[in-house]
Image (cartoon, rainbow, N blue to C red; front, side):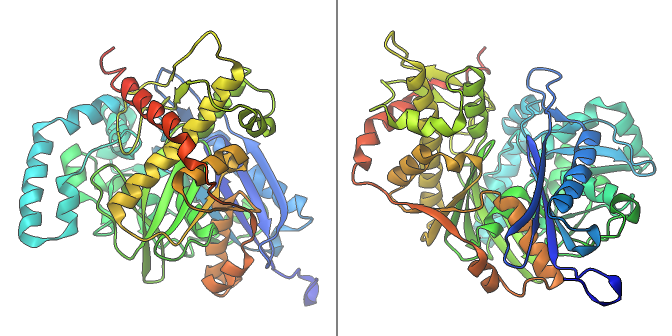
Length: 521
């Protein structure tokens, strides 16, 4: 509807989700209905074994292209866009020159393992033993959770910490820029914001910062202690702002008009928000390139003993919502690999192929191309098929891969229940892999809980849109957002769940046998 004086009514929110392999943009109306979309593939780079990178310029050009494409697909003009929200994969970072904006190196992906040796040596170091011992003593005296967390802290290759330490040790240009105080660090959200504002903003939000491993989620600031231990210069890190915040406007030269940037959000926290998991005990399972299981723990961070990670879900106004998260790195990766091996031709047929079999004929698949995460936490684990026989078919291999996704979901869920002791209120699933009915039903059976699958799978972009819309006044309250979310199907646990016990136990045995493979190679 056209407004007076020839201007178009601003009545839409644009949200972009920068994933590991795809960048998607959706245009949403007041009913949270997608009015236009655009997406493009991004190609990860593998310069060396264990190295995973992305080209910053490719990410930038693709980002601009999908925004323009989605607005065009909706039949709109950029001046009709009220706000922009951005959701990004977490822990993927680059560094750049503050004066020129030119990056010193490619994005180093969250899947990259180049910091693995540093992680292993630090976790076994005398320094860490001292940190653990002193922290235990301080926790005993003060009972503060921050010291309890420090007493059990272990490093992970998926966190930024030692990939950034590797860069600082191996890139002379970065070392020089740090000395000259012209080095900027940023995850993808920070880099895009810097580009969108022509270098005016060096900011991130609490959800992205808390997922780096360098941020203290208890004190809500970059960890000075950690940076001192590992020799990371605090000066290079961006200022951290609320998740819902006016981060600035896009430079007019990019889209023709300035567009307010009203949210930056890490993808898993954005998916949690998009699923409207606003209450304590709400659980979200995102199955995409990896699996991420999150539980809302309210206004207190969870201190984990087995590798669940306490992260900031979002900070809006003065209210902070924390999540406890467990993840498995190779969910969609394993399914894509199976397709490349020609175990199947169409993803849409995989559920039917698996269901047609009574079982996997004793075959187990360990989905650990990037090691094993919580609760086993072994970066040296290898991916493997076990239990192969002359009778094994392609369909058996495929079913074993799909089963492994649900088995990892069960493993993460059990740890989450044991550790957090938070009563579950509801479970919602999203991500491309949740379209697989076999995985969804097996997960519901193993968890013994009903699982809600939404109509719209791209929850990360919807979450970023919701936060941007709340900040701009497009939507008024979280209660309004709950009414906009719709369910496509609810998976109920079957009475035959016990039939999976033997397969699950065999798979757990296969997991243990795959561990420490590379460290002993």
